[in-house]
Structure formats: structure tokens, C-alpha cells
Length: 408
Image (cartoon, rainbow, N blue to C red; front, side, top):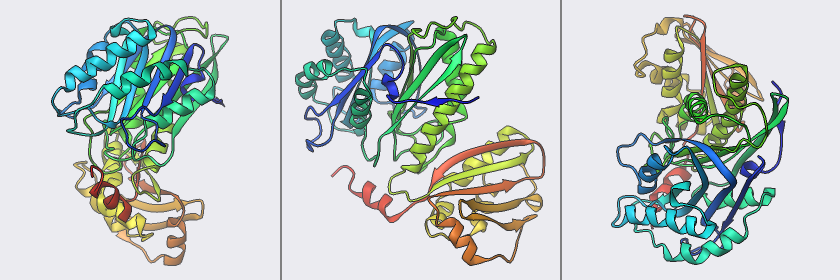
């Protein structure tokens, strides 16, 4: 299916407005630090959250709030994670109430998110002072989504925003998203906040099913550094204003919707992996002809999570042994003697390992291939018909620098 890209991120779909400003949580006045997404009518919602046993207060609150049939708003801050500090639960509830009061809605209609440093109390005063301006600047123009996307960034080097349109039931349906995530990214989501809005008419149960199905094959297939955050939140709102026949079962319209959502989330997931802290290369590892999908995913995740593989890609070193080694400790049951490994990019493709053994290959060509900003590791198992792609990034000196003084 062809999808039409459109401007606006979370404001592209009908009925949604957004804003983002600097209120004073972060000392750098050039960095926006609070964001708001608002829907003009109650929207059905679905959410997925971190599997880390240590959960930030906003996550715990949202896990309950998202059970409601509908919500109206998402209120988020960056700079402080509101996790593992005195008064966290009270601060999360305070964020929910102050946003509700400012918008004239009920607290249970507001989802809240925080991202930033763990262990520091969240002062609500700057947010309280900034909310009138934040509400005033709500707009359905692309600038609203742009401001919100910048306001949730921490160590991200660029905003992540995308929106598409497609036909469903004779109507034009729009899905848009913003996200942040640069470090603490690992399968089962990372330190990501991702908000998706759509004007599709869809029942809550179907929205929840679609989001889980898509997350498993997109956001849960990326890794930057092997750390899973305390604050991961993936939230989707659907207000039904597109006017399509409501999706209330797993019919053809549901499949079309899922495919569109998967396309959008794949784009967002790859952008997150490419913007890993200090990263210079996006790594896409495709395991093909595996015995089954579970094996292919296990192998691919192990490769993109391997620190030594990441270091080799950073150095543009075609050290395929790192790849085979990562496969070997993945836990997957496979025959190393059937494995072929290739490196590929816009600069070409090269076979470096055949049937589990190294080959003589052109090192200069290999280095040229690995110098591109997007590198593919192509693994052929010769065992079955399943194929999976996972995404990661290289590890650089800058990753240590960024995280060595992240708090101070």
C-alpha cells in the first residue's frame, strides 16, 4: 500500500492540537521542556509501558489512566524523569490535575509523561506558571507538533516526527507521531516517549490490539545500548473524526490500519536507532531463511545489541566474527555451519562469511561499504522461510562522553 506523507506529526490528524514551550525545568532557556497534546473530543486510547520493574511515577499513573475508555490530553516534561525521588507520585498526580484544570477537563482525561534525570524531585511550580502559555499556544498547525517534539527531547540531536495518510472505508485517514529516544534504548522499548494520534474511527480493544502487534515488530526491535528505561511510554489516541466505518473487529479495514501503523512506527523506530547517543551509523540487521520468526528475532536482536559489533561498525571494520559470536550466545538453536554473512550499504554489498567460515574479501570495498551512515548486516541461515529485521547503531567515544556527565 502507498502512503502519502503529510506535515504535522501529532497535529496532522483531524481534531488534535499541540504545543511546547520552555517553562524553567531545564536551565537552558533555548530548550523547550513541557509539551501538550490536546484532542477537541474524547479519544479512545491505548498504551504500552516499560517492562523495567523500576517504573517512574508517570508510568504507574498512566498505566491506570489508560484503562479509561477515552482521554483528551497528554502533558509531558523533559529534564527530570520524576522517578525514584521523594514526592514522585504526588508530582505526577499534580501534573495531571494542573493540566486538567488549565484545559477545563477531568484529571482522569489526562495522561502524563516525564523524561530526564532519575532521582531528582520534580518541581511543579515552573509547570504551573507555564501552563497558561502552553494552553494558549495549542495549535493544529505543523508548528504545534514541532514544538511538542522539541519539548520532549533530552540527548536527542534531532526531533522525530512523521505523519501519513491513506484510504480506509472510502475516507482519508491520518496517523501522525512524535517521539524522543536517544539513549537507554533496548527491546521492550527504551527511554522513549512516543505519542501517536489518528482520526481513524476504531474501538478501544482494536486500537490496543493493533498497537501491541505493531510495537512488537518495530519499537521492540531496536536497541542503542542495552538499557531499558524507567519511563518508556508508547501512547496512541484515536478520535474517529475521519468518519470511516468504525473498526470493531479484525476485518479487512483492521488489517489496512495495522499495516499503515506498522509503516509509521517502523520509520519512527529507525529514526530513534539512528539518533542513538553519539551514533554515526544506523545498523539494520536482517536475519533471513531462519527456522521461525522467534529464532530470527532472537538472532537479529543479539547482533544489534552486541557492543563489540557496534564498535566494529564504528571503526568501519568488517569484523564479521563479532556478528557470528553474538549469534552464538543469543540462545537460538542453529547450525553455525550453514550461516552466510554479508555487509551492505548504498556503496555496495560484500560476502564475508560463507557456511560459517571466513572468506578472502576486498577489505577496501568492505571499508567503503561500512563508511555509509546506514549499514546492513545480512545474515542467511539457510534453515527455513522466516525473516526479521532489527535496528541499532554503532557505539562511539561520544556515547561515553554524553553519559559520563549526563547528570552533572
